Picture 1 (cartoon, rainbow, N blue to C red):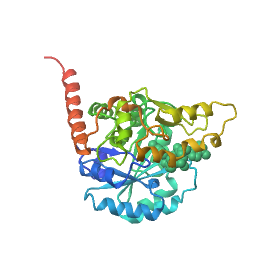
Picture 2: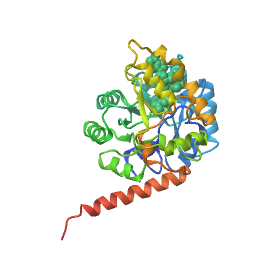
Picture 3: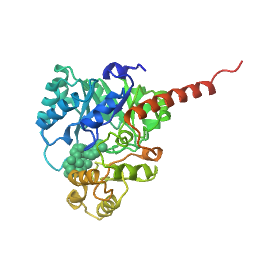
Picture 4: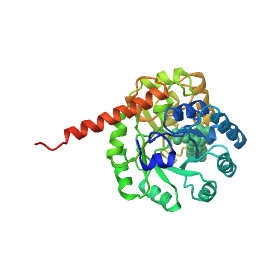
Amino acid sequence: MKTRITDITGTRYPIVQGGMQWVGRAELASAVSNAGALGILTALTQPTPEALMAEIERCRTMTDKPFGVNLTILPTTQPVPYDAYVEVIAESGVKLVETAGRSPAEFIARFKQAGVRIIHKCTAVRHALSAQRAGVDAVSIDGFEAAGHPGEDDIPGMVLIPAAARALDIPILAAGGMATGRSMAAALALGAEGVTMGTRFMLTRESPVHDGIKQALIQGTERDTTLIFRALRNTARVFRNSVSQEVNSRESQPGATFEDIRELVSGARGRVAMESGDVEAGLVWAGMGIGLMDDIPTCAQLVERIVAECRESLARASALTAEGE
Ligand code: NAD
């Protein structure tokens, strides 16, 4: 498969593993890259910029294929030395960064100087247009179905992807609900040139998450995620559990602030869930696509299956729409 996205990523397939806090480590990123897609290390999963450099080096020992680094710029409970993380990414020799959250404009010149291509993950056409103006190479456009922070506009991929494709000159990756080859075929039909998948890659054998979490998520349906942080305008989609329900309950109290939920939502607590396998131990981030996921394949099995099913789906659509004699 060759699209403008594979020209940027240097991968066999236009499939990117989205950044995921606590999940985007060398085990997963290298397995995704070895499977012919683009693996992504998540910068803020590493406690310091120096630890990120060590993780990049560790990933290099696990794959000789290209991989990237995600840098998310969103509200955090602790200050983050973004400039130092940017410097590590620029100096590491990694060829691609996935930025997410706030505009990456202030870091673009440094990345370009170092020859790092930039894919900016965003949730609205207006943000994508501003990223294009700022000089990013591609955008990954996150529909309302997405895990993590799907923005405040609630536009599902069926409308958001073609709206972005129509408005932008740079190539786009479709994200949010991307779970199968049918999703990928749909994304290509809607004008994307590849897909970004987060939750689907989290539910693979190589993903460094406790099996208890993987099993809980594959048993979930498309109705088992919920939104938090609405009133804070930092909306996030997570797996519905007792912690997310308690967050929703506290958030709905008049005058509620972040301080009322801080101890429930901290990343440190979510990490305990991911590592212990106790799905009730903290927030567990997941997209609506879990309703389409019912197994834990290897990354290689997953990527090959998605590519084959994508081709079959496009052939089926082509046959269905062929002109009659
Ligand atoms: P953290 O422990 O600092 O914060 C936990 C959550 O609370 C995050 O979603 C954060 O955005 C939110 N938050 C923190 N302070 C806030 C405030 N004052 N107002 C509103 N919301 C606030 O973060 P972490 O879990 O260690 O994650 C580190 C980074 O990764 C953060 O930028 C976070 O947003 C991001 N993240 C992204 C995803 C994703 O799927 N896109 C998932 C988890 C975390």
